[in-house]
Image 1 (cartoon, rainbow, N blue to C red):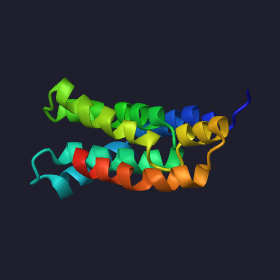
Image 2: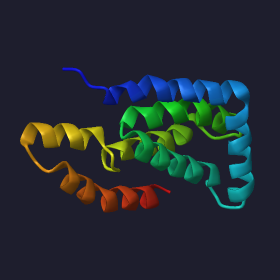
Image 3: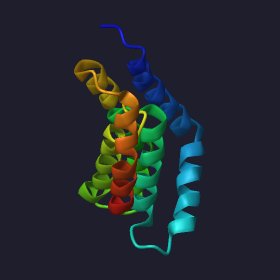
Length: 136
């Protein structure tokens, strides 16, 4: 089976490595920390928000997990987050890629079960955004 959709995974990992090497990611996370600094767990809330955006851009669960693992995890550990607490929002936010359109899972399911992919996308928007809100 040939799928050009999965080409996005290594490209998102490459993007994360470029953002980390250039220092842009750290500057963005520090500005997010300034905005959400007074909120308890503000960095974790920001990570869930960014994972939601990455899930909406890529549609693949592992891109959000790997990208935030490369970018956010080292910074969160340096800021004093416990490792298990820092991994929670990264993994939970990455799991949103299953629900938020365009989801590769919905595309595969729709193709195999001959179900409308558009209806699957419509059915995933509200639960995905609701979970993102509840995670944050």
